[in-house]
Image (cartoon, rainbow, N blue to C red; front, side, top):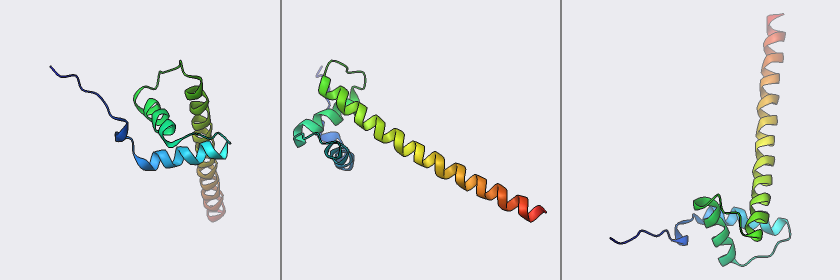
Length: 92
Protein backbone atom coordinates (compact mmCIF):
# COMPACT_ATOMS: atom_id res chain seq x y z
CA UNK A 1 0.00 0.00 0.00
CA UNK A 2 1.16 3.45 -0.82
CA UNK A 3 1.44 5.82 2.14
CA UNK A 4 -0.40 9.12 1.80
CA UNK A 5 1.70 12.21 2.30
CA UNK A 6 0.50 15.74 2.70
CA UNK A 7 1.89 18.42 0.49
CA UNK A 8 2.87 21.86 1.68
CA UNK A 9 1.07 23.24 -1.37
CA UNK A 10 -2.27 22.43 0.27
CA UNK A 11 -2.02 25.48 2.53
CA UNK A 12 -4.26 28.39 1.51
CA UNK A 13 -2.39 31.39 0.11
CA UNK A 14 -4.53 33.92 2.02
CA UNK A 15 -3.43 32.39 5.33
CA UNK A 16 0.20 32.53 4.24
CA UNK A 17 -0.27 36.21 3.31
CA UNK A 18 -1.72 37.01 6.75
CA UNK A 19 1.15 35.22 8.47
CA UNK A 20 3.65 37.08 6.30
CA UNK A 21 2.13 40.40 7.40
CA UNK A 22 2.30 39.38 11.08
CA UNK A 23 5.90 38.19 10.81
CA UNK A 24 7.14 41.26 8.91
CA UNK A 25 5.31 43.57 11.34
CA UNK A 26 7.36 41.97 14.13
CA UNK A 27 10.59 42.42 12.16
CA UNK A 28 11.34 38.76 11.51
CA UNK A 29 12.51 38.31 7.94
CA UNK A 30 11.79 34.86 6.55
CA UNK A 31 11.75 33.47 3.05
CA UNK A 32 8.42 32.48 1.56
CA UNK A 33 9.49 28.84 1.60
CA UNK A 34 10.22 28.96 5.32
CA UNK A 35 6.90 30.69 6.03
CA UNK A 36 5.07 28.01 4.03
CA UNK A 37 6.81 25.34 6.10
CA UNK A 38 5.92 27.03 9.38
CA UNK A 39 2.29 27.43 8.31
CA UNK A 40 2.20 23.77 7.30
CA UNK A 41 3.59 22.76 10.70
CA UNK A 42 1.05 24.99 12.39
CA UNK A 43 -1.90 23.52 10.52
CA UNK A 44 -1.00 19.85 10.28
CA UNK A 45 1.45 19.23 13.15
CA UNK A 46 0.41 21.64 15.93
CA UNK A 47 2.27 19.69 18.64
CA UNK A 48 5.66 20.16 17.02
CA UNK A 49 7.88 21.82 19.62
CA UNK A 50 11.48 20.99 18.71
CA UNK A 51 11.98 23.94 16.39
CA UNK A 52 12.82 27.29 18.02
CA UNK A 53 11.82 29.27 14.92
CA UNK A 54 8.44 27.51 14.96
CA UNK A 55 8.03 28.41 18.63
CA UNK A 56 8.67 32.10 17.87
CA UNK A 57 6.27 31.95 14.94
CA UNK A 58 3.60 30.24 17.02
CA UNK A 59 3.93 32.84 19.77
CA UNK A 60 3.51 35.71 17.26
CA UNK A 61 0.50 34.17 15.55
CA UNK A 62 -1.15 33.29 18.86
CA UNK A 63 -0.61 36.80 20.20
CA UNK A 64 -2.15 38.31 17.06
CA UNK A 65 -5.16 35.99 17.29
CA UNK A 66 -5.55 36.83 20.98
CA UNK A 67 -5.53 40.55 20.23
CA UNK A 68 -8.18 40.06 17.56
CA UNK A 69 -10.36 38.03 19.94
CA UNK A 70 -10.02 40.71 22.60
CA UNK A 71 -11.10 43.36 20.09
CA UNK A 72 -14.14 41.33 19.04
CA UNK A 73 -15.08 40.76 22.69
CA UNK A 74 -14.81 44.49 23.42
CA UNK A 75 -17.04 45.34 20.44
CA UNK A 76 -19.63 42.72 21.45
CA UNK A 77 -19.75 43.94 25.07
CA UNK A 78 -20.05 47.54 23.85
CA UNK A 79 -22.97 46.68 21.57
CA UNK A 80 -24.74 44.78 24.33
CA UNK A 81 -24.21 47.66 26.76
CA UNK A 82 -25.65 50.16 24.29
CA UNK A 83 -28.68 47.90 23.69
CA UNK A 84 -29.30 47.56 27.43
CA UNK A 85 -29.03 51.34 27.91
CA UNK A 86 -31.43 52.02 25.05
CA UNK A 87 -33.94 49.46 26.34
CA UNK A 88 -33.68 50.90 29.85
CA UNK A 89 -34.33 54.45 28.57
CA UNK A 90 -37.28 53.28 26.45
CA UNK A 91 -38.89 51.51 29.39
CA UNK A 92 -38.75 54.66 31.54
